Length: 222
Length: 222
DNA sequence: ATAATAGTGTCTGTAAGACATTATCAA
DNA sequence: TTGATAATGTCTTACAGACACTATTAT
Image (cartoon, rainbow over all chains, first blue to last red; front, top):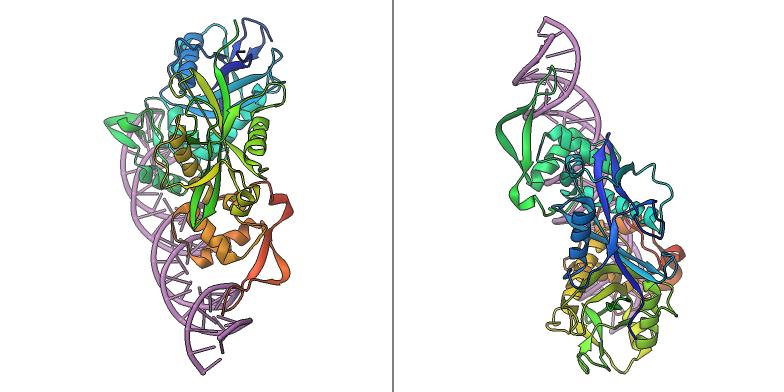
C-alpha cells in the first residue's frame, strides 16, 4: 500500500519594506483555508521536480513569478494535525530578495505582511515564520546573508541599515565596516556615487560575483 | 490519486569511542541494500507517530534500543534518485549519546564506525553524516551540545577532551573553563573526586537538570 | 559658510590565549 | 620527595566599541 502522507513544500520569502522585514503571503485559491493568506507552497511533483529544492523553486516561479538567487532549507514541519487534510510533511525553504524583485513580479494574489503584524495564519505558518526570523537573526551575525536583501548595488550605510533590521539592533559603524571588509564579499563600483541629498554622497558597492547566490560566513560574529 | 513518494526518517547517532567520533550503523534486514550497513531509519508510521520526531524516537527505540535525551532535526534529504525505490524524502535527525548508552543497548546488528573511516554507504548516507559533522562542529563552538556525549558525571578535563574531539582542535584550558562557567550548565557533585592514577584527582561535575535534554547557547564562541 | 551624512583614525576596555604557579594525589 | 595531572592566577595581545575628526556634497 502506498503512503497517504501529504508531501508539500512551503517558502518563506522575505524582503525589507518601510525599514522592517516583510513576508510574502499568497491568497489561497483552493481549500483548505481558501481565500486566506498563507505562505506560498504546494505539492511536490514527482515528475517535474528532481528534489524538494526544485519544488520550492518551481512554486516561487509559477506562483510568485520570482527566481531567487539564494534559497536555503529552513526545517521540515510534519505531523498528524498541522494540516486538516491529514498527516503531512512540509519541507520549508526561505529566500531573501530585494523589494524591487517582488514589486517587479507584481503577482495579483500576493501581499507583503510586516513580520511583527503576522498573527494568525493557516496551518503552522505563523510558527514557521518565527523560526525563519530566528535563523536569519542568527546567520546575520556572522554571514553575508542580509546582502541578499540589498539590491544589485548599494551603499555601505544602506547595507548597515539592512543588517540592523535583520538583527533588530543598532550596530557600530566602525566594527560593521571592519567585518564587511574582513568578509570580503563586496567591491566598489568605480566612479559611481549615490546622490541622496544635500550632503556627501556614498560610494556604491555590489556583491562580488561568487557571492551573488552563495553565502560567506565568518568565524566570529559582528 | 495518492502520492507515491517514499516518506522516511533517518537518524545519525553519534558517540565518542577511542577518542574519535563514531556513528552508529545498522545492518539492513531488507532490500534495498540488504545486509549492508546504513544509518538507522525507517518509514514514517501515520498511525503510531504524531510527527517525524516521534518516528525518529520510535526507530531509535525499536531498532537500536536507545532513548536519547537530545534529538535535533538536521535537514531533509529528498529527490528522485537517492533511493532506488523511487522519489523519496528523508527527514534526518541526529543524536549524541555517551558510549555506555550504546553498549548497554547491545543491539546485535549495530556497529560503530569511525567517522573518518566511513567511505561508501547506501543512499546518500555518507553525505548525511558529513553534514551532521559540520553541524556539530559549528554548534560545539557556542553551545553545550558536546555535553550530551559525556556520561552522567564527568570531570572538566574529560569534558574539554570531548569538546576538542568535536571541534577537531586543541582548546586553551583557561578559556575553555571560562566559557563553561559562563554557560552555567554544569554543577559540582559535592564530595566526589575521580581517581585515575597517581596524581591529583579531578572534581566531578554533572549537567544541571534543566540542561539534561536541552541545549544552552552562548552569544560568542569558545 | 552651513548642514548633513560619508568615511576614517585612534583610544580604551574587554576578553581570549599563553604562561606560570599552586594544589593534590600515589608511589 | 617525586612525578603526574588538576586548578587557578596573571600577563599579554587582539579585537570590538566609543569617540572624534576629516571629507564631500547642495544650498
